[in-house]
Image (cartoon, rainbow, N blue to C red; front, side):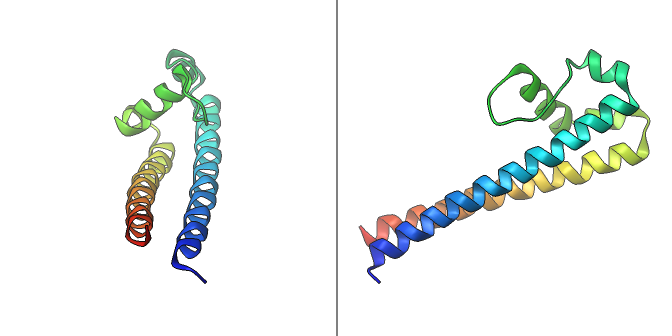
Length: 113
């Protein structure tokens, strides 16, 4: 197989893999948002009903802020806080993995050009 085609297939595989990883992350985040809404409905409403998603929105931005700023630690709910903490760590690892592999795939594409 030609190097250019191999890199193209690798890039396609990367794109599919990254999309699946994002979909799983959004699904997991929505489950956490639903748990927040169920266990702390007043706080969920006060936050503007945060919800992860594919497209930019105020609800998506607020969910990201809630997670990345560790606002879940103020809920007084150790179980839910631990779940959000696990989610936050997984999101950061996913971000590093996606960006790191994107750099490698791009470098390979440039190298075979």
